[in-house]
Length: 299
Image (tube, rainbow, N blue to C red):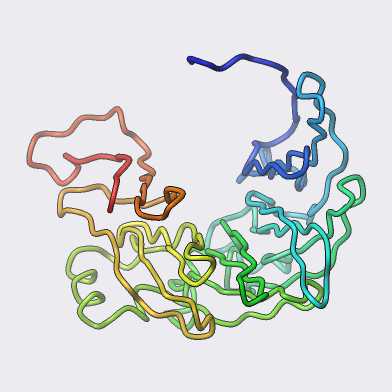
């Protein structure tokens, strides 16, 4: 790869690495796994990279039995209740089968004080519910009004609760010791009737899970990678009442699978990433699988 030079390698044994987040000369690496052989309780690893040629593990945290800590966000927050750095971690079950969700294992949001990355301290945790596999992906933002919001995806919750709970959660951690769920949302339940009707005619409900969520417009809006519904854009200026704005639809022959996305610095360009499991496989022209996973660009 041009302009890239290998500097160092730090082996992290057991399972697979998940999300990677960099903050103040420290790298935070989540842990992922599914089967017993690949799901040790690794939690999040904090790695000192002040000298990039000699990285070293400082600590491990968010290690709950029977779970993975795949996704992590780290940043500084400043509120009347807390000043410092926090890590918000998505905790989900190793067993992602519908039978596995009956286990009495914590799954949901865990919030840590990482002002001193050598000593991560649990501030709070908030369950995503027993009828849930837990938090798959999340992120956080502190808005200009001072409120700190965590945006979560809890895939399959809509299916498991027969629509009573959506796959998208909005949590307030302005006081990180007392997280509060403000809203849950789902395109299959809360989008305008015309959108829901079109989605039902094009896709089955289990193809419309929410995979990830991300804020923009200084935390007043968000987008949800809602799998075969595309990226769904929401107004969350009133976070207790998310309001549907628009989505990026797929063609009838597209595989779908909106996985994640990113915005340009001025937020005029949206880049959508699809997750397709067998991209090397070819199909006859005219079949539904003719269009595979792409990186899609939107104005």
